[in-house]
Length: 553
Image (cartoon, rainbow, N blue to C red):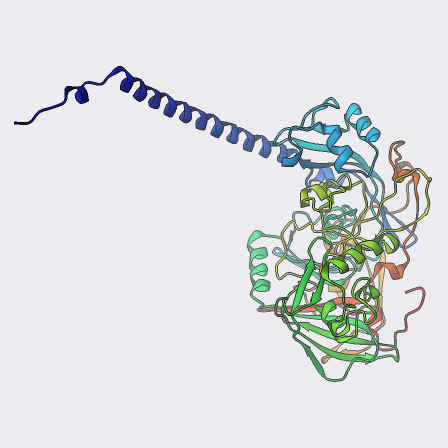
């Protein structure tokens, strides 16, 4: 016979209460989770809405200012622009004025207080009090009177254009896309504003100081196709450069691995810890001082051509980074950087920046307002540094570039005069080197026409490289309309378009125009060949066999 304990079958009040408490806690957690999900979805929707309001490449942005030509330079009239960034986690709960006063010292706290009170420094595009405490997902926006750095007035030449792609010959000094102090003075904006070629997809980039072939996709399908070809090394690339000294005869192959020393400032070196890469070089001519060299990169590492030439002891003549004694007495020849550690090299590069004004922090100018003083600040924080001018060495030659890449840029003009109490910063800059693919009708002189209104192209080079005859004495008169059907605007200076702002620091500073030699590096993307396509440009004047550098070059 079995016996049952009735106490186990009949729930006691204590047991009942425990079960009830468990159910209540479970329901409470479920409700809390549901509220968190709702808050998260709400935050995501708010973020999406705020991002949609942020500045983009629209007709409104294209028309916010215009160009004028002066002293052989393309200049941009100063204009008002809104820089934006989202609140960082470490700022949450802090007063907006305290954050800017501590994190961004380009201006005194009084200036930030003025901006907040006047409504030019806002949160979620709304005016807030100076003691406002930042929250997660807050969008900070600052309206500034923006000044851009001048670039060469040499025209961008359309090499080839059809329904799928646009191929151009980029002059030195013009960045590919907005970065640093450059926005309207970029290839993307110039093509949109003067050629009516909009919504182009950046497939690869060239360094700001590098000239040559540059390819854009006009359709997503074509852009993806070309990116795939570059990524899978189906594109053969040829560059021309001028290096110091008498380069050795024959084909010279360099297979030294390259390591990125610092992504932040964009500098590399030969190192056993680096990635494998190969570049083939062949001397074309020697003028008694410098050599013209054909470069064939078989891989696409950052700064590959320039770093390999530095290692071989024949750096590009006017390379502002890899032909500098910051790499030691041998300037990096044979991998000798003077016994410096990576940290010491980066430190020295940053130190000489103040004197030579060519180094910068990698960051997106469209996101920058002020210069952060935190050495370990994240990329978005650096983007908040716009009124600050920073120069960057970064040349990204990775094998496929971002469609909206904005890694950094520049070359800043030198300051001639400034008031002693004015805070004048440096300027920003970007580079990119190897990744290039382009195609064009190689037999068409018209394919090399220029874009400036009533401009004239004069090419007097007469040489043969790898069996390719370079044209001599070309004299072609062209207009923008002959290439795109879109007439070029008037580029004469108009004093009525020149705006000033009493609170703008840059309006109080006079800058000296850069010299022509400051706007070029003797490295040119010459030919690109892929499956069933090939594009080529004319050679720049410095690539002539008898060319001699002078103060005007």
